[in-house]
Length: 164
Image (tube, rainbow, N blue to C red):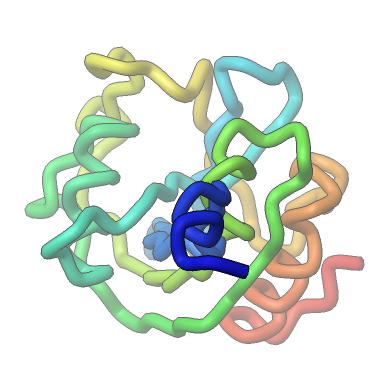
């Protein structure tokens, strides 16, 4: 094959995992924050989002939490974090054209604020509602099937719980 025909062939860039930071916000009574997606009734998850170029996962955590639930970092403190959680995107996911899936760093944080410090009415709202539940009350059916394995791992790693 000549060089000119090689150049004319359209080569798609190799897909990679998108880096992501996720928040487990926990109160002193052990209850954790879950948020109901605005675009999918009865779909509950942890706030999370992509790590932008030039950011590290902690920077992304602070930015994403402020963007998604309006919570300033003065109202929570990082207690623990774990990285390397991966899931592949479902082909219907809008980002599947660009990424294989997401590789997440989960941060378990202690909440020191009040419910009024959480504001879902952000510039680009993602959540319709939020609730505080005990970790053992989390229902795996609240998350899409392609994310469930990560949620199983996260609940086991952070709370020694089997949520299957």
